[in-house]
Length: 193
Image 1 (cartoon, rainbow, N blue to C red):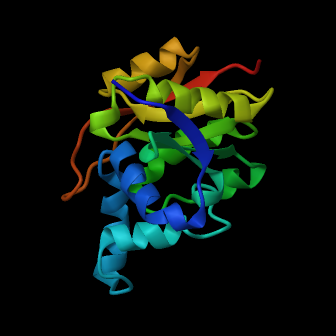
Image 2: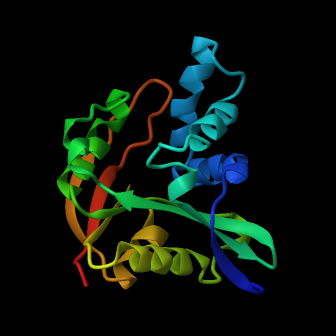
């Protein structure tokens, strides 16, 4: 049973914990991408690169747009949300694996976009994910809110649909030799309130 749950804005000093939770929320896709920095020799570990990226003040999916759920003072989960600016229409995917995600996200220009929702396994089932999503819905104001998840993530799909999100579009995932999980990426949107 969860104790006292609080939601707070992240701070730069939370970047290591944010990196772990972003990787958790992406089912390892984030660390797979971050490992490229290890292969290039610019960092020693994928999580170190993720931490460094999340510490950047101007990264839309970084600490400045992140909020953390704490249970009795222990970090239990995170959510990252931001407005999808018109300039996003001109962005290129950092790798072909991200192309279908980019295609879907470019349909959300002007929306509030929930980039990541992650809750540690031992804190799941206590409504923390819902609290984090509700937090982002409040931050969105009168904007429509969108997010992308995997078609085989039944728990996430159930949560988002119970929060009023509807499926808008799908794109098949792209696999590589080292990342071969097959599924569709699902764009979900909740109309402006």
